[in-house]
Length: 590
Image (cartoon, rainbow, N blue to C red):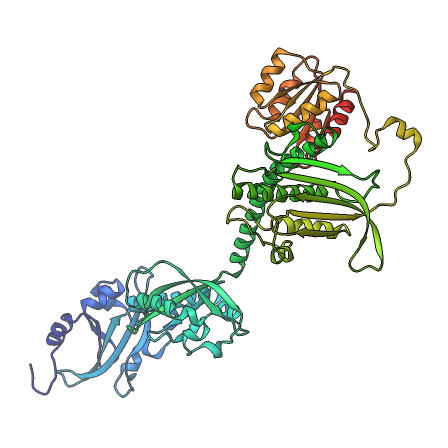
C-alpha cells in the first residue's frame, strides 16, 4: 500500500468486497466508479448494470430522487457532504422498497485526487418491525381505550401506570385521581390482601387461577363486586407489568339474585301448593267430623281419637257472621289441634291409669262482648273451645299468641298456630280470649260481630234447610268416592249414605278402575291428587265410557276450570263439609 494513506483502485475494491454493507465510490468528477457486491444484492442489479447507470438516482425511490443526497454532483470536490447518518428509501429492481441508512466521507486516491465513499446499510427489517410495533401499539391503544371492561396497567409496586375510560366510568374517578396512585386505593379494605397476593403471583410468573373475584369502592363509596383477571406483560425496556382486567358484576349478581329468588318462589309455590292440598284435606276431615259429630253426638266414630271425645253445644238460633269460610276453618282447626295436643300431653304425663277421660267441648252462643278500641259492647257470635288438658301458667297465657312462641319440643310445634288464629280473628273485627290454669284445662273463646242479615224469604226457606242448604234425597242412586285420604272417605261415605245414596269407596286409582270395570255408578266423587293412576287418568278413562256418570272433582288446590274442560260435571274445592258434598252430588246428578 502506498505511503500517505492513499489506496489504489484494486486495493480499495478488495477492501470494499469484504464489507457486509453496500459501498459506492465517487471520483473527483462526481462519477460512481466502484460498487461492491453487497450493494448489488441490496438493489437487485448486477455490477455491470449498476455501473452502467448514468447516475445512482435510478436506485433511489421516486419520491426521494430530487433529494440532494441522491444527486451525484453533491460529491464533487469543494461540495459539503451530509453530516452523520441519513435515511433513504431505495428501489430494488423488482419494485420492492429498501429502507437504508447512508453515511459518506471523502478519501484520497493514489493518483492524488480525492473521492467520496458512501456506506449503505439495509435497515428494512428494523423499519418494518418498528412500523409493526407502532401499528400494534395503535391497535392496543384502541382496544385499551374502547374496551368495555376496566383495564389498568400496574408496575411491580402495585402503582397504576395507566387505566382506560371504562375503569374511570366504573369507579367514578378521573384519570388524574388514579394515575400513579396505588391500586389499593380503589379496593375494598377486606379485598386488598387477596387481590395483591394474586397480582404478585402473576408478576412472579407463578400459576394462578384464570380469574377471581374482588370488591372495589366507587368514588361515592358504593361497593362494586367485580371479576378480576391479570396477565404478565413484558415491555420493550425489559420491565415487567401486570395488565389487570376488571369486569363489573353488579348487574350479573342482581340478575343471579333475581333468578335465585324466582326459583325460590317457584319452589315455595310448589311447596305451598302441596301443603295447601294436605292442609285442605286435614280441614275437610276435621270439619266433616265436627259436622257429623254435631248431627250425631253419641256416635263414637266421630271422635278425633279413640281416647278423645268431642262434644258440641249451642244456645238457640245463632245469627250469621261475615267471615271468610276458609280462614274460619283454619281458626277452628288450629284451636282443635291445640286442644287435642293439650289433652294428649296430659295422657302421656299421667299414663293410662286412672279415670281421666280426654275431652274437647265446642260451645256457641251470642254474647255482648267489650271490643277493644270501641265504646260500649257489641253483639258477638262466640265459639268456645275447651279442653280438660294440663292447662297453662299465667306466664304462658300472656305469650300464647306471640309468633314462634311454643312450649312443645323442637320439631313438634312451630309456634305459629295460635298467632295465626289471633291475627285472623283480629282481621275480621273480632276478639279472642283465653282462660287457663295449671291442672284445669284451657278455654279459647273467639267472638265475631253478628252480621245484619235480612230474614230469608219463606218461599226460599221451604226449599232449603235451616242453614240455607238444599236438602236433596239420594233415592238409592249409586256414588263411587275416590280419594287416598281415609278420613275423607269415611266422612263422605257416611254423609252420602245418610242422604239416601248408596256410596262405595276406592282408596286408590287402581281400586277405582277395578270398581268402574265391575259396576256402573250414577256419580263419581273424584280426588285429582293421588298416586298414579291419578284423578286425571281416571277422568280420561271415564270419558271413554258410552254412558258416562256425573263426576264431581274434589281437590285441595284452587279452582280448576280445566277439569270441567276435561269432562268433569262440577268442581268442589277442599275443605268442604258433608252437607256441601251432598248438595254438590245432587246438583251434578240433577
